[in-house]
Every structure is written in structure tokens, then in C-alpha cells.
Length: 201
Image (cartoon, rainbow, N blue to C red; front, side):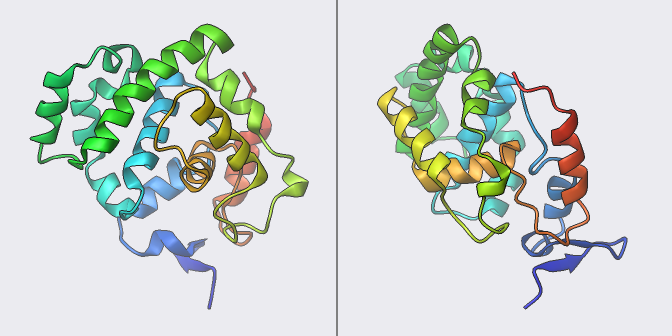
């Protein structure tokens, strides 16, 4: 079975983005490109937590609703959410109404504020876990790695929730800590170029 699927331009993309048409723009313009903005990083790790046990299609379709519900994932604002906000979010049909995951986002926002105080930024912290590219498994053949296990363990020690090694690995893929586009994917080289130009925090 091929690891790629052709896009509308006839060029190969990672197989997974051929499942539904809306995956192509996300795959081509976001997935795997390096991120250093703290708000975007917090959004990505929260959405990966919400995705746990669900399809990414569900999360991507609801992303704008999530952004609206969680103040565009400004963790300084989310950290001030109360039980009233939890109730509000549990009644919000536009998002995934899972109490544990909602409460985890609020908890993690508080932990993110603490982490920024300690490390300077979320970006500086997360990019410390960038693996050596030569030590990575073949693209899209793993669901965890030594680094995702280490990052998950450290986040949990700091009080974060819903950040298991598989969720963290998906986050690492999404935020560009690794380039997990398959070898023949036309976007892989674009991501690699972006990573070369990217200034690590």
C-alpha cells in the first residue's frame, strides 16, 4: 500500500491527508512546520489532548469553535476559568463536551503560566526536547518516542493532564519538533527547509 496520495496538483502527500478534503490545507500549510509562538503551542497541545480517542477530522472541524470557547487558547485567560466556565463549556455543542478534557485545559493553562515563569516561554521548554533527526524512526511508523515519553513524564511531573506519550508525540509532529512527513511527500522538503531557517528559542 502506498504511503502517499496525490493532491489536486497531482503531487504526492502523506496518505492520511487523503481521508477527507479538509485535511489537505492543514497538511500542506501547518502540520510539521516549526512553531515558536506560545499561544499556538498551547492550542496545539490542547487540541491533541481533545483528539485522544477521537478522529482528527472531528477536532479540525471544530477548531474555530474551540478557539472561541477558550479565548483563542490564551492560557493567561483560560487559567482564570471557574466552575461556571466548565458548565458553560459542557453546554457548548460546538466543542467536544468531555469534562475531564475541559478541566485539563484549564489546569494546563495554569501550569503553562508557571512553566513560562520558570523557563521563559513554552517554546523554549518544548524545543529542548527536539530529538536528533538521525535517531528518529522512519516517518509515520511510530506513535511514541524516547523524547515524547520524556516530555510526557516531565509535563505530568509539573502537573499537566491528558498529556500521555502518544498525545505528546502527535503534538511533536504537529508543532514541527520532528518532520514526520513521509519521504515521498512533496511537503516534506518544504518543512525541512522551514526547520533549517527556524530560529530555535
